[in-house]
Length: 457
Image: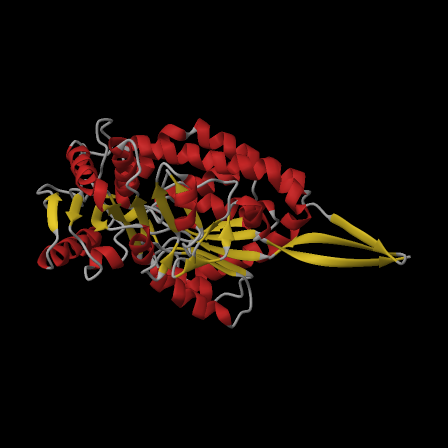
């Protein structure tokens, strides 16, 4: 039997070894879900919501153990693990408060003696192939509305956050979710690939563009819903009318380095109008140098290790490429010479779009800062990407910022904020950043299918 090693990225020590799922065990779990889903779909909506309400409470009651596990296997600073749990509960609260409204039957009209209504039925058994960077936040976007909608969920956590996935499964069972309505798959990419061979009724994936495209191609012949939450190369533009450079620099820096830069909507490239460029770069660099990197369990640590060893080398290549083409490394010296997958925040000034750091997704604490002449040049550069997740503008004028934001082909735009997700708003990507939408009422109805009723008599 194959095993999966869970490694602490801060120490490179093996935390635990788990038996990976096989073709046979995955097939068995799917058959359990196929039978269980039919029963679960008949449970009244209000009772399904009640089970999720108990899960909401259990996340808080067990937050110390959950946060510590998340930090140990993923490397994010402990306080950020608590923040993730709080954020997940906030999203669940949205689903608890609004799912009944958006999933209840709707009487539409009466025409010539014929009454019409819409009801919403589950998709069936759905696969949730989830991500490691925010296993709670990314996960609840899918399995919570999926379960509320009457589906059974075949949940594949990332191999880098499997212990957190096991916690999620245990708490869902304790909340009253039947075991034959939620099953977890242990393994790496091979296990995820096996899920796609099953006659599933929908697939919801969070991860890289490359893997997302492979999944979309595999799912196309099934003619079932396939939603993809993929990566980004999210720009931030600082206009020359900002009044508090230090505050803007601090907000931008947090957008770059929070969660060790491993966020789909992290700030990945910065454009600054020439009139404030020098002051912004000076403030941004000074604040970055004060960041404390170290043991993520230490409350003083603001930055921990990267979650994956190979990412250190990948980011170092982006840094070297930029420097070789004329960029200046204002801070950051590559891999910290100690055990663990640590990388000092790297700020590259004088960048341009011939450099990988301004075009390719980074997913780490590395940022290029480029000077621009005016809004037109900024827009042209911000649009120069295959991704379309978020874009941020900092300015004292909403009208001026709005003119830029309207030109962004992204699912989300920000004015004077960044790296933010709200449960009440749709979370969606365009182009290489994904397909479909989670969160908001659109993310509730993404997990059901409408049925039209024509009733005469």
